[in-house]
Amino acid sequence: MKKLLISSFLCVTCGFLPLFATAAPAKTTQQYQAGKQYKILNKATAPTVASNKIVVLEFFSYGCPWCYHLEPTLEKWEKTKPENVDFERVPVVFHPNWKNLARAYYALKALGVAEKISPTLFTAVQKQQLNFDNDQDLANFVAKQGIDKQKFLDAYAPSPGMDAQMANAANLMRRYKITQIPTIVVGDKYVTNTSMVNGDDQQLIQVVDYLIKKITKEQQGENKQASRQ
Image 1 (cartoon, helix red, strand yellow):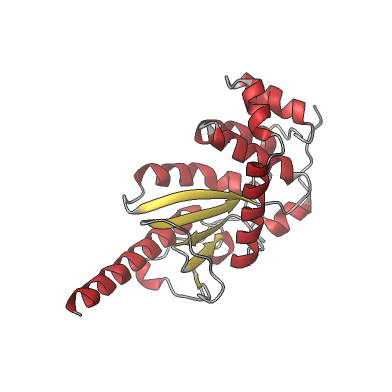
Image 2 (cartoon, one colour):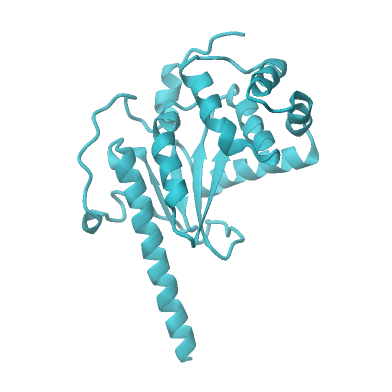
């Protein structure tokens, strides 16, 4: 199995920041401002995600070192996120080598083991620098994690379902104008990323929580206004 060399390309697409940059101190929520720590999406182009909850999307790749850096903080947040929030990941393909990694995510998700295997797969790519361009190497790795190899290959193989998921991910990237990762979209209304918080993972999550509360208040206000009519 070949080793994967993390090139300077990744630093360009993964946050535009040095991987070991010193994070700035976290700011209070009163200081979070549109155009600084987050941006307001153009509603004319933002797609609608079908859900009764606030949908939080993380655009990521196993090939992105900054996504790997964020992962432990994001995992903790996911376990304690508000009940009115749905969290989903969207694998991106900024580099040809990332296509197999995106398909791997969707295959693992189809098997119901994405959350279980993702940390190990992240480590294999980022720490061990393993190259999964070869489908069999990827399947063998997954099998070592206790997942049936053939079931993985069946879920991973090209199919209408897989093609649709990959196309949807590419469409979301275009619609939200994703140019760097990790980027997080909150409720089809707001977007934030590591560059906007100076590489501070904790602050990124704080901004996400702030935006969730902001949308929740907006929805409550809309509901009260509707009830008066």
